[in-house]
Image 1 (cartoon, rainbow, N blue to C red):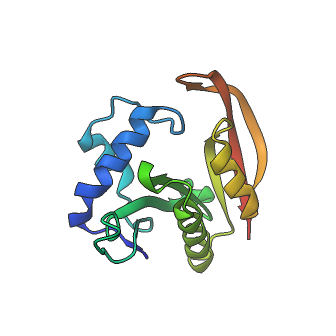
Image 2 (image 1 turned 120 degrees about the vertical axis):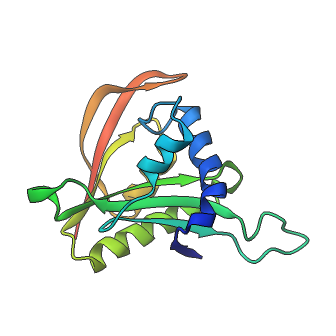
Image 3 (image 1 turned 30 degrees about the horizontal axis):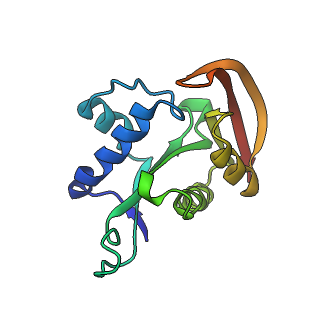
Length: 169
C-alpha cells in the first residue's frame, strides 16, 4: 500500500533515508546529512508529495509486514518555465529491496505526475552504477537522455557517470 506520509511515519522513514544516504552509492546527498537536513530535503511541500510504501498487514510469520518498506518524493523538477516536468526520488529499506517496492513507488510517481498534468518526468542524477534502478526505470519507459561522465563519486567504484533519464507523457 502506498500512501502520503504522515508525521508519525518519520520514525520509520528516517532510518531508511539515513542508511541510503550513508551508503553513498546511489544518492548525491552528503553522507553526513543530519536528520534535520534529511527531513527538510525529503518531505515535500505542495505541489509536491512524499509517500511511503507499507508492507502487508503484520502477522506472526512476517513481523516486517506493516512496517514502511520504502518512500518516495515527487514534484516539479524546476520552478517557473520548467514546472511542467516532474521529478521523483525513491528509497527502499535494505530488507525490502528486490521485492518490487521500488518499482511500485516509481509507478505511483508516474501515475501521480500524469494525474497532476505534468508533461513528463525527469530523473536528474541516476548513478549509472545503480544498475537495478536503471533497469526498473527503462522497463517503465524512461530513456537515458544524457550522462555526465564521472560526476558521481561512488564509495568503491570511484567516479561513475550520472544519467539524466526522462519519460515523456
